[in-house]
Image (cartoon, rainbow, N blue to C red; front, side, top):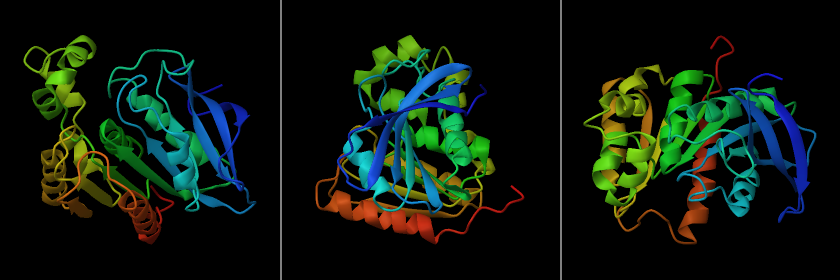
Length: 266
């Protein structure tokens, strides 16, 4: 067994009649990590969709309905829980070494027999925005990245989220005492390595991840000559209501499919 190997798939009841749903186990840093895998029932090769959750531990855990919603748009979807969750080994450290769980989840999709190798997309919501950007920096074989209400600056999260400081002090420490740990967890500092187009979706009323994260990411990517598109919504907060949520899912997956395929030389 090596990192990025999918070692077990347990069939789960699926709310969609033409999408198979699995509780999957894969290897990351030698640990057995869990996640949801959704596969449309077809023998055709499909694009891959890496769904990177927000939160930590049970907060922000991927919802089956959301995984199926993305898969229904024509993707094989993998949604890792990150280490230490739902029976997985190890311990989350909030975009520290658990970033490797995202990197290795990418390779699970890349090695999937029905996933197009040059057609894998990253989607990060909330804290998952950091995970998606770090994955694009590290892997580079990514067709597109979508950050929806995504964190881009970990020190800004510490400043804004007073309710998270106790957890962040325990897991990371404070930015004053451990600035290098926050620098390492902030993808803005290495975004020159991102080679794929980035779509930023953000609600301007978001009090969990402020719009400043979107603005900083947009400015940073433009300054470094990257392809970036923004969809800012004046009226929405961290959770977009229906039917807007569903319509934006359709729009963002259509945006993903319009991006140029990854070069085989990457």
